Amino acid sequence: MNPVIVAIDGPSGTGKSSTSRAVAAELGLSYLDTGAQYRAITWWMLSNGVDVNDPGAVADAVDKPVIVSGTDPGKPAISVDGLDASGPIRSQEVTAAVSAVSAVPEVRARMVAYQRSTTAAAPGGIVVEGRDIGITVLPTATVKIFLTASAEARAARRSGELNGALSVAETQDALIRRDAADSGRKTSPLAKADDAIEVDTTTLTLEQVVERVVALVEEKRASR
Ligand SMILES: Nc1ncnc2c1ncn2[C@@H]1O[C@H](COP(=O)(O)OP(=O)(O)OP(=O)(O)O)[C@@H](O)[C@H]1O
Ligand SMILES: Nc1ccn([C@H]2C[C@H](O)[C@@H](COP(=O)(O)O)O2)c(=O)n1
Image 1 (cartoon, protein in one colour):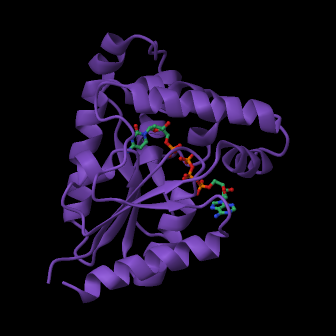
Image 2 (cartoon, helix red, strand yellow):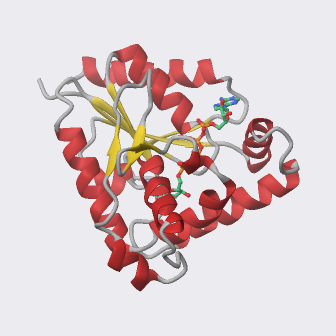
């Protein structure tokens, strides 16, 4: 039987990473965080003096960084040129620049090729999370989930993580700006696939979301 491939998409702060890692761990699947890859290439561009608002400059440098993603849901890992990038890719500077870098078609082409080859190399199946997984990266995924949550809930979750570095209102504004940029770009924008199942996480605990997604995957597995 073909391995199970789970695509999880949705806007920022809806719980994609937390849910995907827990679902993969529970079902014994690999896990891929594609947002971390776009953050990693953005970090490299910023660290190497590339103007992230110049799509031509970003495209010229696209093949330079060596980006390697781990696929163990219990130990998410990403390196750039052999250096652990898991801390720096979460900085505010990277978060503010990642939508511009990830809109460059050459960046997307490189990342999508890597995401497909990682999926093909996961014989036991994989959970892949991002913005364009169900429509562009893995259109034949076994199960497609689209997570949503109110802007207020997402901002409250994120500002809890930032230890008050930004107010809830500032966090909400930043999330809404990033979603608008990610949904409005020309090349594979953030969007729900027609055959994706929407799960609104606003009033659900993480455990409830994981339980629902695991049940949807099991249901699909049983019907194959
Ligand atoms: N259902 C939930 N209820 C409450 N908090 C949640 C829920 N799901 C996730 N969280 C918390 O919300 C925050 C954001 O979650 P997570 O990083 O998984 O979202 P994301 O969609 O991957 O975000 P991004 O796209 O910005 O990387 C985390 O602190 C996480 O613990
Ligand atoms: N498949 C993907 C995944 C992510 N991105 C871009 C858009 C996001 O703003 C950014 C960071 O993702 P996050 O770590 O917040 O999930 O990366 C994308 O364009 N396509």
